Length: 128
Image (cartoon, rainbow, N blue to C red; front, side, top):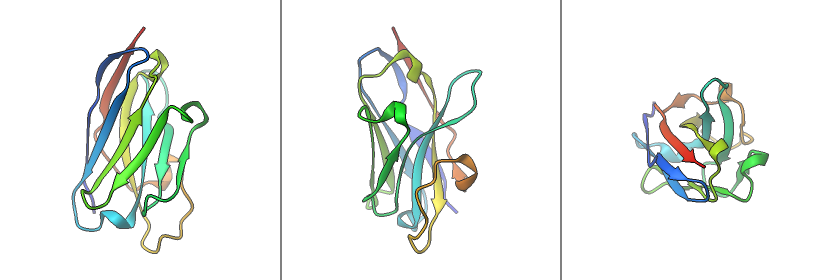
């Protein structure tokens, strides 16, 4: 089992950058693929980015390609989401998620049902 705690959200202006962090408890963080999702008010939660266990493979939603970067530091049990050139439509609660992948054989997942553990979320608000 792993517990996830997001941080780094806040209120910024359009064009600014933010880096979100997700700290995981437990000793087996490197056995989890990780992802970020977000949920804007009145909308369903949507996939943002994902990264495999080793940090060697990443995948992004089309709207985030080129602006967002997901990374991880397994020594620190932390996954990051660097968000650049933020837009008002990026306003949402951002959630970190973990998928158990013991052998590292699973393809990168982009749907909520694939993930086993979730954080409580961190609010990102982008003003125009």
